[in-house]
Structures are given as C-alpha cells and as structure tokens.
Amino acid sequence: MNQEREEVIVRSFFEKRVQERVLFELFTPKRRNQALNRLCHEHKRILREKYMIEIPTPNSDPRHIFELLQRYGAETTCYSLSYNDKIDGKELPLMTALEHAVGFGAPSIISCIPNKLAYFEAEQSYGAPQRYILKRLN
Figure 1 (cartoon, rainbow, N blue to C red):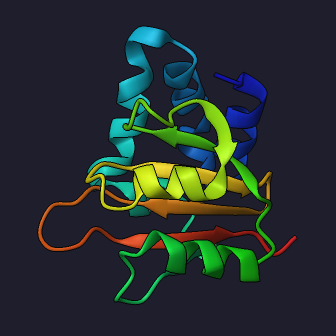
Figure 2: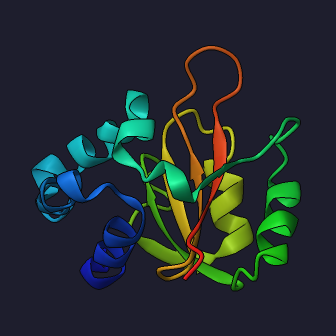
C-alpha cells in the first residue's frame, strides 16, 4: 500500500466532505474495506461528479477500456484501490489491473495519471456495473 498515491487519488476525485474519513479508513487496516464500501451504493455522492465521464455500453472489454484510457494519455503502469485483493494497494501494468477489475462485481479505482486520470468501476447490482473515466481538467 502506498499512502501517498492513495491520498492523491482521494484528494483528486473524492468530495471534500468525505476525504478525511476515507483516508482514515484506507490507512487503518481493519477499516480499509469500509472506505471501499462507500463506493458501492453511494459513488455519485462520494466521487466528484464533475470529473466523471460515463463509458457508454458495451463497456465490458478490458482492452476497449485500456484503449480509451490511452487516448486520454494513460501511463502503462497504474495504482489500484479495489475490493479485488489481487490489485488493491498495488502498482502494476494498466492492462493487468483492468483485467482484474472489469467485471469483478465490486468497486475499483485505477489511477492512470496521478491527480488527473483514473478508471472507476462501480459495484454490480442489477445488470452491468457503471463504468467511468475520472478526468480532471487541470
């Protein structure tokens, strides 16, 4: 786990009113899942909507999402926050992270360019989960 990278993700894409609480939960091993759980049903209240670009369907192919992120300037490596233990708190190749996150059924945020670009997949409840590019303009 890289606390510096995770703090950049939270400060960049989460609403200010929840940032301190989310950081506390992420950095407390027994509470880490609580921070991720906030993204399950309330992601539109937790994440800054002005940075969310919904990926239109069909959007379940990791290669398609990889290509889309590359068009936005994504780097080849990324950092992930995820319910999926295989990628959570790790820096790894972007395609590998997407292969583990897309379709997993639980939330993931994959940071592609610190403070500027990320991929977010919401929890799957009914039908396909919502998938977004998180992009800051500055």
